Length: 244
Image 1 (cartoon, one colour):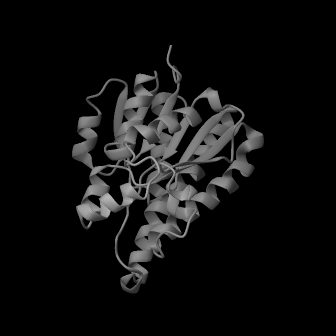
Image 2 (tube, rainbow, N blue to C red):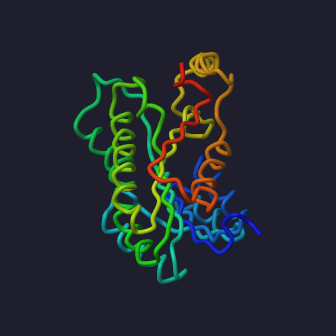
């Protein structure tokens, strides 16, 4: 029996990168997994996997979240796990960041996580149990990047703490993960040069970039009953970078 047997899990941004790693691990541990994403082609491929159902979702839309949460509950009967993983990044320097850039980043990374909890946590409360895992970033804990990305991940950190106190007495746990540089298509596309990645590896005590599985393993722990007495926690997964 897997760690998530009988559970229904939602993973936003679940069709690629870190999210796809979580979807694969959760399904292998017995969960029925809803891979929520905006990329329809990637969702079609995700739906070909065993115990995985691809569903389109624009996390920046309050209305889309309301409909999505209702549909998942009606189709699967319960929602036990929510991983707010969907997000975007940017390498734009602070001197070039405008209000539109700020609003777009916050809509997806900040509001997306808030809206997910807003619409899914009440379902979990009615069930008397549930686990929410929010994906922040190591940039929310150290002085790494004076930009809208760091601000959006700082919002996720604050919201996670607040939600943990809001819903804990009703049986719903909320925790946050803080990944460092993880080797995914998104980070490869954002990287300005191989030299930059090499510098980051050299500056990391464990001397490598993180892999999606590193984040998925931690998410599995927080999603499962193994962490039944943990809420409001923060786990940094950056190879020791921020410990220096």
